[in-house]
Image 1 (cartoon, rainbow, N blue to C red):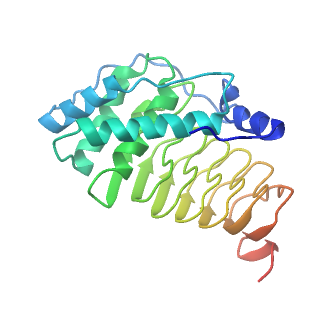
Image 2: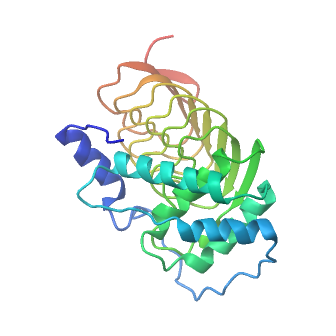
Amino acid sequence: MRIAMNADSRIKARSRVSAHDVFRRYKKETKQEVRKPDVKENKALKEIKEVWQRFKYSYDDRDEVDTEVFGNYVEASALVKVFARLPYTPKDVQLFAIALAEFQEEPHFNLKAGVFLSALINNGSAKHYNLDLSHLSHLSEGICFLGYENNKIVNVTGNVDVGLGQEMRAGRIVLDGNAGVFAGSDMSGGTLVIKGDVLDNLGDGMSGGKIILHGSAYPDVGKDMSGGEIHLNGDPARIGCNIHGGKIYYQGKLIAGKE
């Protein structure tokens, strides 16, 4: 499936991953040598790793990011459904998240990891998942597009990068950390809670659902939104343009939209 986008949309979408340092406003941690995590491997985890190896992230810098992510998510979901034959639990998904450090040198790791984890969670049989990604905080580029098309309840510890909860449909994502640009973009349902700070374009193009930000936001909050709610509780941020619907609150006070 190819999604047609105009020139402005292509520029906007490509900008979601074009910056090599999307956490440019956050203080970087000292780079340290990372040891291979000591993870006791069970049969389900072994199978998840095999599915990961089958999944080859298709990257094309001439393509639209939204189309690219959608296509890779569909591919990852199909592989999970076919080859993850053993029932895997939320604990298995967390063990895999820890084991991700083994694969961090792979091409487009930050994109592949977020899309693959999203496919694992959305296609799993459980409703609740906990992910501790704090061991990956040394990466110059964090995991992108975690929670893509989310329909589960997910608690995440650690910083993430571009597109947290993009195209979110239902459920709840709680991030105990900072997020990059375009968090909650194009979401249509569910609740996204970010306890830390977030970069530009929070809730860009959202049509439904709720975003609750406890930290600070950078400019263009709610740009192009048509529905849903954004609740800001940190430092005030510049509201985006072309807001056609929905509501934005600052510390409980309505600052955009109508009651």
